[in-house]
Length: 136
Image 1 (cartoon, rainbow, N blue to C red):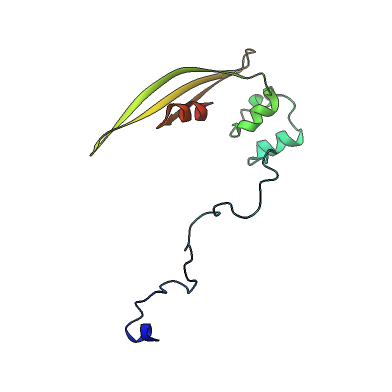
Image 2: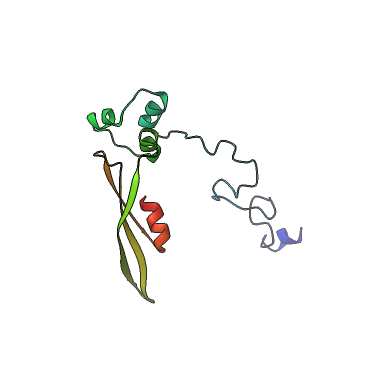
């Protein structure tokens, strides 16, 4: 009651939950439950749901209707192990800051199946290995 007498500037400023984490911390740190279904693909887009349901049998059908492919699992579903990647270029890019320059690396990776399907992956990251992994 002493806190109420002096204006309420004391320990509990929040909603009375003690040492709570407050708002906006996302989905937690992963303490509860495991990841049993980690390997299985759960489609996010409508095209992904149609591919998983078997409505499309070839990648050509998707390109025929000019549908945007926003999930890499769609390509993996049709191509499987036929894809090969090749790192074309790793380019350092710099941003001028008040403390100096911040160097990042931009990776360009070509991915294809040697049968007419080619894609280009581009990723910029502070580490070379992370940039290559993201571009693939």
